[in-house]
Structure formats: structure tokens, C-alpha cells
Amino acid sequence: MKRKAIVFSILFTAILVFAGCTKASTSDKKEDTLVIGTLTTPHGEILEHVKPLLEKEGVKLEIKNFDDYILPNKALADKDIDANYFQHVPFFEQAVKENGYKFADAGAVHVEPMGLYSKKINALEELKNGATIITSNSVSDWGRIITILQNADLVKVKEGVDLETANFEDIEENPKNLTFEHSIDPSLLTSAYNNEEGDLVAINANFAYQAKLNPVKDAILLEEDNSPYGNIIAVRQEDKNDPRIKKLTKVLHDKDVQNWILEKWDGSVKPVAAE
Image (cartoon, one colour):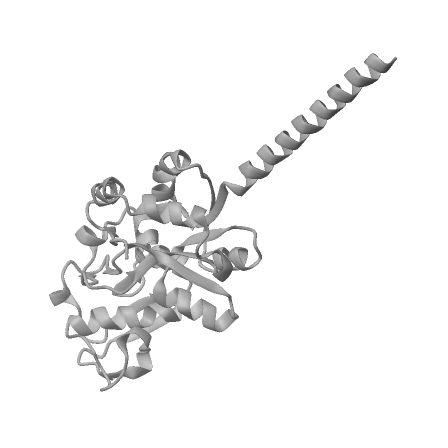
């Protein structure tokens, strides 16, 4: 009986140790999974490309695609995801200010040049007096679009106005008497373009790609290369130094990955060097 008791005790201990190891293994696996919210293109495609590279670093990447600009930040705040990758810096800052999000910028990955497109004209010289410019209702993009127009000598803003935060009321000179419509959701701008609404339509690059538009080749007006609108990895403040985030930003800034991005989108998605 004593021998049986000893054997039983050993077996019971082994089961407990095995269960503990299994639990630890499951916990580790969960800890090494990074859930990131994004848009399908180019962000989602870039993340799919680095997924196997990140797995080699010990992090399993789980990608959740969204189709608008509001839900990825809400999901991050609600802890439904660990990070998101879809927004440029001014949009991020505006969202944090308006919603009180406790977010941090974990670094820029790429810039998508904003373009103005048209089915009515083939060159800027054809733009008529009184033409209509259609933009989105995203306030953080207004200064960006106004900057493009000012660089093309189509408008001039008031002295002392910060172009990044400029709005259409800040335009002081408008020699072609352009009119501006800015009530459309960003995701609907390609529909406005295809329906030949307005003379120029300002379309965010990710939506332009979905409509088979290449900003470099197809835009009548294109943002200059010194754009401050880098698309970033956003995280909750407490996670900025999370090792999983560090590994993600590392592989995204890998030279081979950046070359792949340039080749994949014919130079219309421009990688940002690591800080």
C-alpha cells in the first residue's frame, strides 16, 4: 500500500507540473500575439508581408481590417486590439484631442501622397474659373489639401496661418474663385470621382488604390515629397515600449521591406526611415 501511495503521489505531481507547463505555454502564446487594426490597403498588405518576418521574432501577428477611419481608434481605446496602423500624424493628434484617448505614437512607417483627381480635365491648365473642389469631411486633411492648392498657386492662405491646421476660411486669395465641398466621408470620395462630381476630387491614397488609381501617375495635383503626414503605429500609452511593438516597428523598417513597399506601389507609397 505504501508503495502504491508513493507511485500515486509521483503521478499526481507529474500531472500538476504538466498542467502548469501547459498553462504557462498557453499564457506565453497569448502574450506573444499582437492584434493590430488596419485598413486593407496598403496598410493591411504591408502587415501581411511582414507577418512571417515577425513570427521569426517570436510574435504572431493577428490583423483586423476596418473600412473607416473611426473604428480603429475606438477599438484601440476599448482594448479590442493592441495597436492600429492606418492614420497619419495630424489625424492621430486630432482624434486624441477630440476623444481624450490615452494613445502614443510608436513611429511612422510610410507616407501616402494625397492627390487631386479628375474625370473632367487632363491637366491643371484646363481648370476653369469657378471650378468645384471636393474634399472629405476629415478636418485633419483640410490643411493638407490647402497646402497642395497653395503650392500650385491656386490659393493663398492668410499670413501667419499654420498650413497643417488651416481650414477653408483661412484662404485669403482665390484667383480662380474655386468653390469647396467638404461634407463627404473619405470612403465615398472615389464614388464622387467616378460619378464625375466636381472638377477635382481630393482622395486619400488608400482609397485611391482601391479604385485602381496611382497617385503618382493619375493625380492632376500631388502632394510634395516633404509631407509631414506619415502613417504611424498607434498604441495605448502604457504599451509604447511593449517588446511586441518594438519588434513590429523593427521589421517594418527593414531595408528589404521598404524596398518591397516602393516596388509594390510603384513609388507612390514612400517608406519612412526609422527614427
